[in-house]
Length: 160
Image (tube, rainbow, N blue to C red):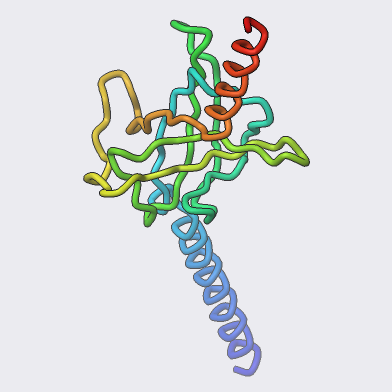
């Protein structure tokens, strides 16, 4: 009888370990799922994207809220770049939110900054035809505007 009791305990322990392993795998699979993120597409035409990498930060008000998942030139317009970003689902992306590319002056690494002016609009959930995700509008960088104005001042000085 003693040997049978040991086999019973060993069998119960193995069954408990297998059940714990299956439960752990199910928990891990659901912990990092796609339901924790919202995906958005941004089309950049006016801003240069040098220094932007897959995995680059996406910021809102200085807080990292996501990352760049993918980017590619569009086939219809080679001056247009489609950027796919993944954002934490709690981030309030509104219809008037715009995306601006910012760079570190020291390293040149680019990030995408999401800016929402006051008053914020309704939440962006509408998906356009031929798009898998909602589209965030491209904004304009203040630094680019300053550079353009300095360029215009330089051209005016040359003409004068």
